[in-house]
Image (tube, rainbow, N blue to C red; front, side):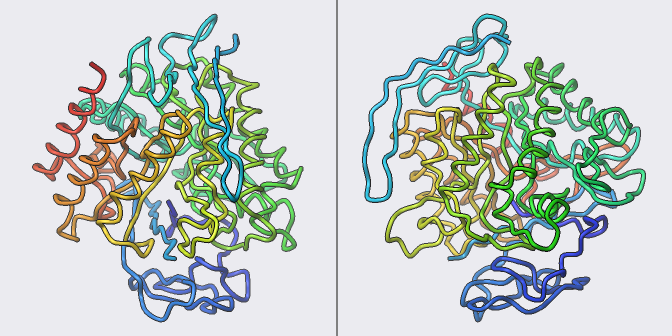
Length: 482
């Protein structure tokens, strides 16, 4: 998901280039960058605050803007996704190859179990299922990126959020494991990695740094919550890939350099090593994620020569590196699930974003697949979402690995949440989807108040929908474990 920090931005201005790249922001209230798009794209209004460069667009394809903040926290993030067009684990595999016109994909019969010094409280996989303590672990969960981002000494807010999450019946929480900034920030801003110099400095002991994430991990552990933790954002909020490139290579770099440049990869590995070594003994960690929604292009920088093969090679290198540090926890990519079908003219199916979900999921060092879904921003219909779920269940069947439906939502003001959340839940339950995590969990905390209502959030105050799509859905997914 694309997240835009409005009040507390990255130190690098988004309008640094003369023309915005495909999918880049090109206007809106408060926007100071270029309103001109590269050839073949038109600047299209999604709402008064967000205009975007869309391929060949002359009218708005659809509007769904997700704005997320920690309530009255000064950090406001607008998330708009658009596509439009350490003992080792034991792994037993039987592999076969199936060849398509584009590539040969290895499928596997694969069981990963914790043994030796790996805790039985760590999640593992067996075929298309997650396992916990030797039993099936189908689950409902949610995203709440904001929990580590509360202000100074607001551990009470972290604890209150985790209490509410545990009480809801949700089992798995996905939250940001990154917070990269360049230059001075206000005291309330969470900063895990400071890019005032290169290489950046990781804030391991400062209150505004990793101690806030420590509180989340320890709090989740004590409440029986499992955590999925991505290491970097594809988008500009809380740093992002473009920040890594711009600070390391200056104006000569492009987004695709993140996946190939040795200096950048070493900086990323250093951050990954710090986080993994800090929490690798915690049973709260379900999985490390390489990223939030990697693509070849970013909000400020173009793709360069990046292709799906490049991002897949990067994922292989980085996932193998993580496994060398921590063989006991699962590793995933955190991609949106874009499919790479030869000859397709459909952007989400032809590898256009630079992602091949099947190839990524097939990597031996990747334990399960992920996919996200936002039909309207992607130029699709709500009904199409059911097919997207089935497409990824088919990949799970082919590769014999778990597939996690990691981000999705239906806006409250669409008036369609009751219909389509229910449809999507029915499709998930009827197919080989190992876990389901909606965007996003809403709560109210003592200091910051109500977490920002981005339209997708579901709160306890949404009484009927909370009961149906959070409490009852969590219980229904758990019935698959019997």
